[in-house]
Length: 568
Image 1 (spheres, one colour):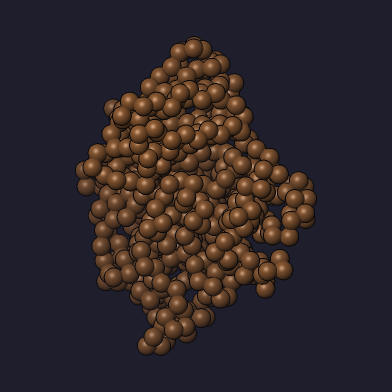
Image 2: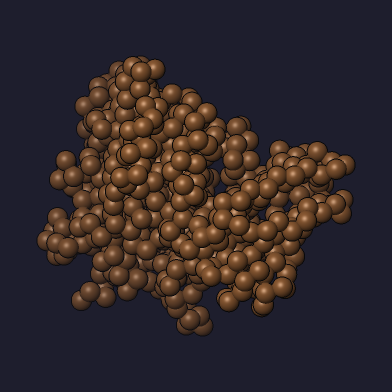
């Protein structure tokens, strides 16, 4: 680390790329060999963020082996850009016996930040209810042990609020508004008769920094896309919230209004591992957006019945729309092995590329600028499944065909995912998409509460809300909450937003009320994510003509007041 004055400068260097992975002896040995590798904070289940200079990545990953190459960071985007009543929340804090408001509980957000100047995040005496803000995007005063960003505590925020120019003291801002909106509906209060779900809760907000350009390049994401985040930074943000809540001796509900289509959707990425362990901790509840991918055209699937057969998958790359490129991931289960060929809209074909572990192919069309890049990982990291990664640069507009061949076939089923909405080019979709299995990461994770969206006006599912099942022996979403044209507050004032991140925020506020009842009011001292999920499921409203759980609604529409009724 001779070229870096401190750990802080090392991590925040624009050349430094983050990789979340297991903190193992081989990793530590490799880090000891190379002075430019830095192993950052290690968190629950032995997961660490590793930082490697961009120009050394290929060498280091090659030395560490194929498992580390496939354990690449997952990129996440935002899951959403008259409703509390349908969730039973006002009845809970108006009920003379319950009288729950979230007081004494923390609601945490890893998102785009929070507008701390809004009165809805203040007490009646105009002091803030925000305990901490960690802005990962601003260098200066990093939280202890995390090594980057700037931290602002409650006292500093109050000092800023007592001046005419608060941002001279606390320079943090939410320029997007997504994080502020989610915080307003989960824990806002005091603006007229407006109340969020847990209006007296304390708040901890983490503003995520933008993913590194290396990750954007690999996923063909234009650098102009702002709201794209690394799984490493999300994990660090959640760990920060948990550490602060623990120091405050307060239970905590965390809202994760983010999602990704990368990975096998089988709950095996480091963030999944981490959340599943966090979810069993007493005094912690994790709510995750199911995603908004049901109608996006970003998932396709198929079955190859026997070796030697094949199936064509068609991808529409809209004509007249010049794009930089796109990529997709094909996942099939162990012990199947599958290979692919790619045909351009012009009819030119990249012949079938044999599927060998760690093999890479790159070819250029003879008459067009398009470049096709194919990588195979079989078995892929931790799953035993096969990952086929296809990247097409400078694609010819029109219909592209990926042909999937069965080399060895036992089950024969495969999934293909394009990037989630907001992370890839909107002009690229499957011709014949599959709305099932569209719940995004980390909503497929066991040990979290995965929340889909419905309209509190029509009482119908919000059309984009992602459908289950997952590639695990569990169903997601777990339940639904209002997520269509929900009223809340942006930095500029009141407004409305739709999406499953909105639903997750409402559910996080409901979790804060259950944590208050269970832990602070001494009704259930063992309250954690799994127990809260059970309580919420018991109270869900279900329509008589549907079977439950199902792929759209989970166990039904959340009604926390009915959950309390069912406890009697």
